[in-house]
Length: 52
Image 1 (cartoon, helix red, strand yellow):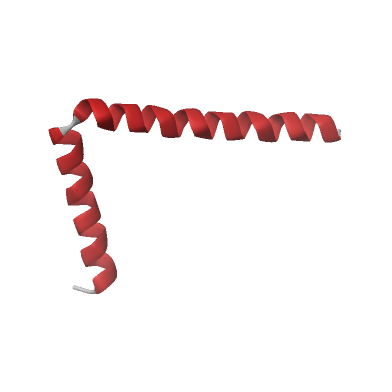
Image 2 (cartoon, rainbow, N blue to C red):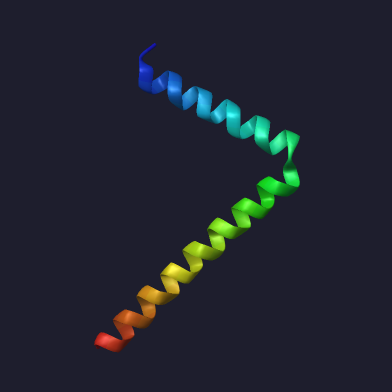
C-alpha cells in the first residue's frame, strides 16, 4: 500500500470517527462550508453579470 492510499484511508477513518462522535459539530461545519461555497458562487454570478 503506498503512502497516498494510506493517508486517504486515515483521513476517511478520522472523518467517520468525527461524524459519529460529534454529529452536531460535524453538521455545523458542513453547513458552514456549504454556505461559503454558495456565497462564492453568488459572487461569481454577480461578477459575470456585471461584466456583460
